[in-house]
Length: 328
Picture 1 (tube, rainbow, N blue to C red):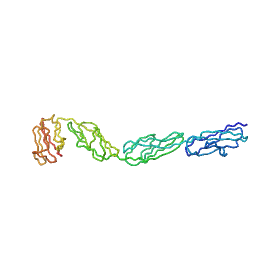
Picture 2 (cartoon, one colour):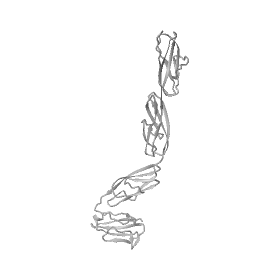
Picture 3 (cartoon, rainbow, N blue to C red):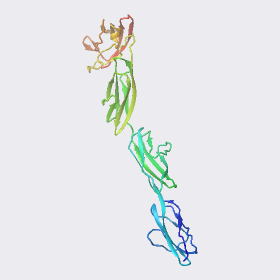
Picture 4 (cartoon, rainbow, N blue to C red):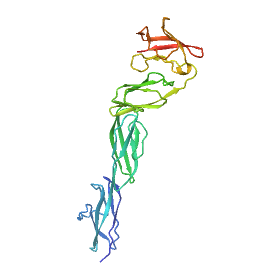
């Protein structure tokens, strides 16, 4: 009986590519027939020659057999696993808003292979990204066609595209009742105007406006439809000098806030003599030792909203003059 060693090779391919199987048997007698079992079911088909090309219907390990028959009638078979690799691109992402981070999570699946390169195209004109799980900021609202291309180590390719919807941040305006740099003892009101569901200030307050009396860094977050915008700002509190610091606006409307005309550093510069005139030169208020108690009335009646002219002379004897506005 003639000895023989059946064997074959097969190239590792990507799913849906053609596998080439080559008979590498080394018999001591010449081969008459070669029968291949491409399904691993134990059934050998008709003689198809030394080289067979086949496309497997699924990725994974496929049990393939080769049966060799020599001219002397000796027959022997061998089974080996033939590998068909695959890569299936996929990803998920968390909903986010304009100028806020979107976390992309790679969910790519591989069979008998591993990923060599990720390529992300976010559809907003930004540079491609090659991280496995990137974070991206979309700077404008809209729908973005985001594509992931995956390349495996044996050059299998796959891609997937999803639409990422980026809603806008709330449209709002932060305004201040006065200067954000003021003297100690004074204050400023920060207010939000615009469409919103809720507001949260760095002070912990949640109303449309807050009164700020202390120096520091502040921020406000304005929420609408699950998105928020944030504005940071700084408040400066200035120290008093030796000149009187006269407020230029007060609101005598009885709300308990800013209802009187104040000389902010009155304790340091007083006593002060004050005189206030309307635009026609009529004196509407005077006091020889001012106590920060003028409420904008003249002879018991509230003055109209207007600009008035003050003259202040304190302990140093200097005359200070300017304007003060009444706004109810």
